[in-house]
Image (tube, rainbow, N blue to C red; front, side, top):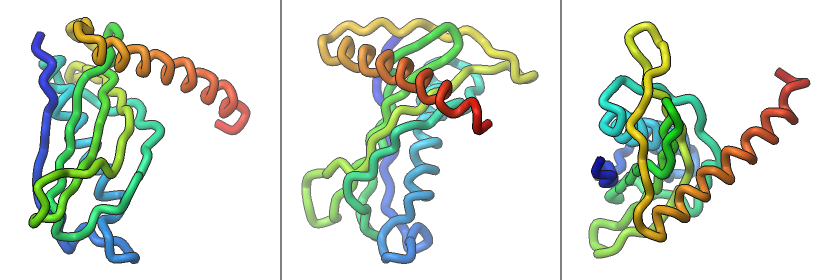
Length: 155
């Protein structure tokens, strides 16, 4: 299967504002989930649900009125899960280049109408960059398992 990034582009709006006058982090998280959903559903061909969002890193604020670009791409697949890298960029309308503002990995699972997991097509990395992305996803899986063990007494 072709693993082209799913890309959303739009202008941030006044309704996205936080108390500091920039785009609210919750708005960015919504965009991340929407782009991830589009990517996962396109890849799997089935309805997909978010099962994990982790390590959201906000590098710089996004200003109201900037063009926002959200890119989502599969970087690892399990039997029913899809690990998707999300990068959020923005630029002033008068500037030609985007700057990275946010990054995270989001995991989706394909499900049927009853919520039962469905198998997903296997993604096989081909380029060196894709192989590094897959290694990154696997390292994060190991770290999540450690974090879950730490959290057990508090759940």
